[in-house]
Every structure is written in C-alpha cells, then in structure tokens.
Amino acid sequence: MKLDPSQIDQILANLCINARDAIAGNGKLTISTENVLFDEADCMERAEIVPGEYVKMTFSDTGCGMDKETVNSIFEPFFTTKGLGKGTGLGLATVYGIVKQNNGFINVYSEPGLGTTFKIYLPSHRFETELALMQDIPEKIAWGHETILLVEDDPSVLRMTTKLLERLGYMILPAGTPSEAIRLAEAHAGQIHLLMTDVIMPEMNGLELAKSLLRDHPHLKKVFVSGYTADVIARHGVLNEGIHFIQKPLSSRTLSSKLREVLDGCERGSTPPVPPNPRKEE
Image: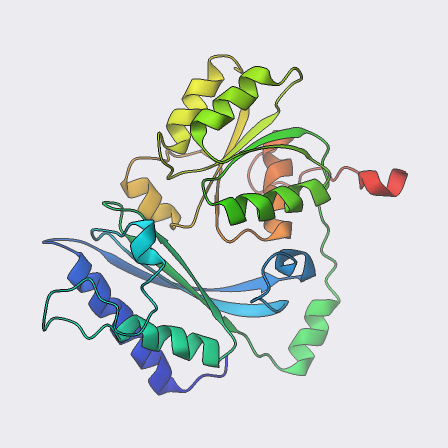
C-alpha cells in the first residue's frame, strides 16, 4: 500500500473520534486489517472497483448507529449530526477524499442501535517477484446447481449478488424483504436447498427469518451475510457458534467455496468437492 503516513493518521483520527462521539458511556471500537483480492467477476457490478489486491481496514464501533438517510449523506462536506460547536462536518469528507485520491473505496454498514462499521479498501502494491509467485497458484471456482433463496434489503446488492450466484450455476429466488422471502418459499413448488440472508433487515433479522422458514423447510441450509464484522454481530446475539457467516462485500471465490462447504455438508477446514461447471457441459 502506497500512502502518505499523515493520511493514515487522518483516517485513524477522524474515524476514532466519530466512534468515540457515537458511543454513550461504555463501548468498544475494533480496528482490524486484512489483505483481500477482487477479481474481474467481483468487479463486474461495481464500477468503482478495479480488479487486484487491496488492504482492507475495518473500523467497528458499538455506538448509536445511523439510519440509511444519514449514511447516504455522511461523506458530504459540512454534513454533521453533532451539536453546534461539536463538529465541522469535514472529518468523513476528508477520509473519503483520501481514499478516493489513492484509488480506494469505502463501504459503510450501520443501523440505529447496532453501531457502525467502516470498511476501507486501498490498493496493495507488492514486489513483482511476489506477484509472479502468486500468479502460479491455481484458484478454483466451486460451481453449483441448487436453488438458493437470497434475501437482501439493499436493491443494488440484491441485484449484484443474484447475478454472481447465477454465474456460479445456482437457481436464485431473490427477495428484498423477509416477508417477500416467506411468500416466495410458500409459492415455490420445488426444493429450496439453501437460505442466504442478510442479518440485519427490517421486519425481522436473518435468524428469525430462518426459524420461520424451517417450520415448512426443515432441511433448509443457511448462510448469513453482513457488512458488520463477526464479533460485532455476535455481540448482538444474532449469530451463535457454528452458524455459517460471510462478510460483505462478497468475493466470488470466498462465496463459492462457502456455499459448497454448506451444501455438501463438509467440515470446516476440509476441501469440499468441486462440481463441474454446468456451462461447460452444454
């Protein structure tokens, strides 16, 4: 990652101050870093992302959270939810400018009462010898054919994920709300093999939706998805140990591998069988 150290300081300072101000009384701010890879398939529906390696910085707090209208405005210069004299409205605009200046992007996940998670992705720069070695490692996509009930309340994410799963060979039943998912499940004549659902949604959360569907589909397998980090989700009691969980944004390789792990009933850490690409048999 090629970035001026003072810019990293600005990102850390602004996000940490915002987290502090959002937490009433005792709370927690978790900061983590990770190397991630986006290939061409991951970027097809997201024009701001260029395929390649990125460094991901995640900031998750247990503060008051924000509604969607506020989230849509937080990077605007001089926009602030703080009282008079307590904020300039330039902190997050500065963070956004630094990230864009360095060809990165930001994802924000927040709900009132559930805290906020910022995920910042900045292009990674490696020596050419390291890249050459990495390109020699074959990476396989695990194809499928089963029917998946996909539930996501963000329309753009729902469209993107539907297309991604269809390219992997699955039949998708897309739903924008839990109630729509229940109606689709009731109307579907065939078997639904897996529920893939966001965790935090209007009407009910993903775990409550799964429990509702299991009454009529006792063999339904489940994968939960969220932009929040796993520890933040766990603190709210939504996920228990052993439940399959994937973080947003979704990588095609991570997603395809997790789906095969769950659908094939493999133990974690084992290598699931890779079904043939159905398109290649046509």
